[in-house]
Length: 461
Image 1: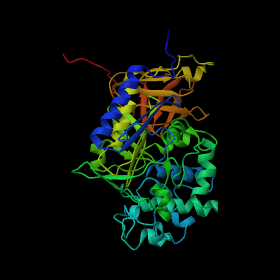
Image 2: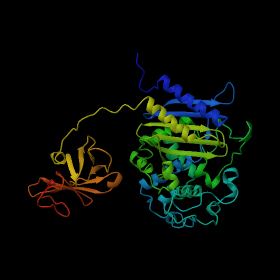
Image 3: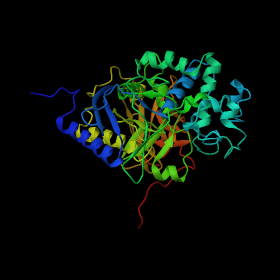
Image 4: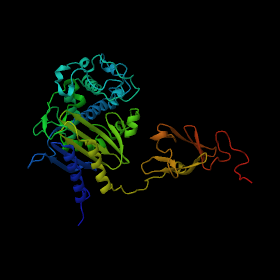
């Protein structure tokens, strides 16, 4: 008897349950719910609770805090893809008087707009949004910590401004736009701006005693696009599948890859933590694994959604406590448990349908100076260039239709790869951003910058 591939093995399921049980106990969370997504669908849900005889399921709402920012970023990227705005536009172009100074839309998405981390006045997450009725109240007159574009500095008010941008360009309230353009198309009918029964209550747990205090549940008003939403593990599992694969009704896979590409300069602390930020998505490197997603924290609730990109495994962890539980670590561990216990089965290798002789001529070994590299032609219509062995500069390249190729990542991202041909049409060398790659190291007669000693290679006698 075989186990269907879409189901997790019993040992894997027990390891997942054990991990969240330890997290709920050691983190002293009133309750914790989690989900795992593999190959685009939820394959596991788990829960632990302090209430005997009852446990929340995948349809119980928890507040998700700053995971809301990713939803807001999706709305902004939709506007960009429609040509309504450019990410390099200053926010002031579309939202005059915003108070964002010279910050661009991209900089606000990446938290490099130079704005303060929090809204001025009383703690905005524990006070009514009516205290901040306008954008001027969200930003106040506090000085920006740094010039726009200079450094990564997480900013909740920055996402309040992006929500206002969506409202201005769509002519409707932020949540109405979100519901019509994202929630309904993806089937996220248990994600809402206000809690809907059944919903967990938010609690503060005393740091030195096993007692609880209820946290207030406020409407954040203008700050809602930064952290207002409530959701469930079932809905966030669907959202995680969307982030991993895209959905052309909402955003393409290509745009989602752009969102998950580092867009903020990492400071020393971020470098040490292996973390950076894209366009509405946090990017982490843990246990040799690239994770893309977002965490959230508001009084009474903690949340994390993370996607293991290479493994196509995602995890969601929600808890109803203010602090004490590292949901981001738990979610990363859930991804690791599945990825290591049940490694992803790769798609079958398939040959190219057609072989272009002009492209095949480029395949094989080349040399940059004395460094051997290999150019490979792949079934997806790309070519890759990288070291024959060991680490070094490497990239895939997409065809431009004119015999040249453009780099897609790493050192060669955006650089032009150009085969240079002899009068008879054969390839003499490759030119890559002024680097010359020849078939032989410092090949005699090739266009090697600086020339080649006419006496050629020699020994020492």
